[in-house]
Length: 96
Image 1 (cartoon, rainbow, N blue to C red):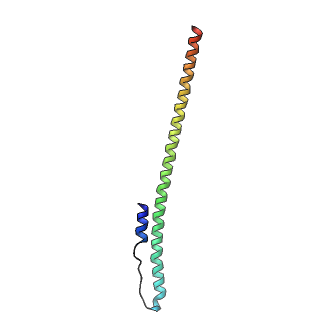
Image 2: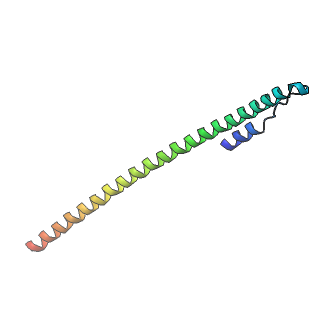
């Protein structure tokens, strides 16, 4: 979608002002201003797209950290259950 927006901005028709040669300087400045404004619009769109991608990456990192902490808690719980099972087994073996 962002690429389509860039293409729409870039493909807009440029404005050419036809003046006599004495106004060549004004015409050049006008064309420069038009192209500069298009470039600025493209830059703004690119900044927005980059910001969205950075936010998405940050969200993915947070989700990864949550999954890692959940996995660590589950592993600790498995270790605890295995230890309790081992203790129970030893007590049963000693008492029998």
